[in-house]
Length: 375
Image (cartoon, rainbow, N blue to C red):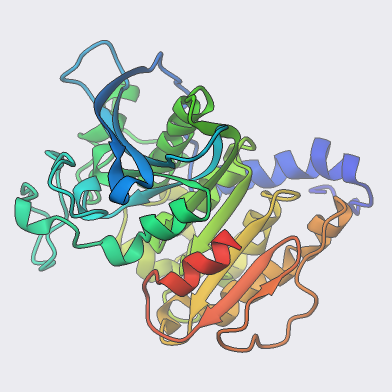
């Protein structure tokens, strides 16, 4: 505990230490998530009963965060198996370029939200086009997921908060915060906003007749892997949490200062974390937490951390060590963590009540990754 008392029981962790650790992450890393939970409105944009050659029901659900149709909203693209006789477990995660990039089907709505400039020459808003249909489909093996009996729900993260330093004038910050010009040091940045929106998506899926809302796993890659971890830590309704190559600020240990560092990430992406996080630029040892404690916040629910050999920027070793050092909390709660801190064999997953693998290849999401998550 913060007073130096050792934690020796599950009750101590649940009632005392876990709230302390969560507060430390809110104060020093991610900031506080928005406290407002609006009355959501959901409208079905489209529904197809014979998607994927007759294997899936494909729906597009627009979720409005206010009474104003022109106000902030997000589109959830949902696939569920046609043959399912009961609601199915579901993977939920953000995508980077728009729901229409997950599947090339021409019926899927092309996002009208801000989209990233792929050339990285600036942060100028531009619209997605028909030419971008299916560009991210390699990261979303929808057929595989549905064929295994699971659902998939995905949202374009730009619907919620544009991914550039705009002073939080757009997205849900503008709706939920009365004054975005003066920010407290512990005010949540974009990652907190995205994590908040995953919880709002879970609100919707919990009452969806085709999805088992008690068995929804949050999934994310890279910066969205950081988001999935924070969503899982702050919202205990998520049944499982998956981090794919999330690196610094996600699964990797900050104190290792390997690959991307706290200073580098805060300099390149000042909108992701809270202002207080900048105190630890070139000063990681002063952080009152490290990211094994973030993974421990998810216990006893299963958490899967994945790395890639050629993604040294994300510090694969640090990601694995983080999961290993979260082990004592999993064990305190009656679960098994990683068996040891040995270097993992490439392409050989380790699965107990948590999971880890390091695969051949680069910073990406592959069928190999998804196969392990489904398993």
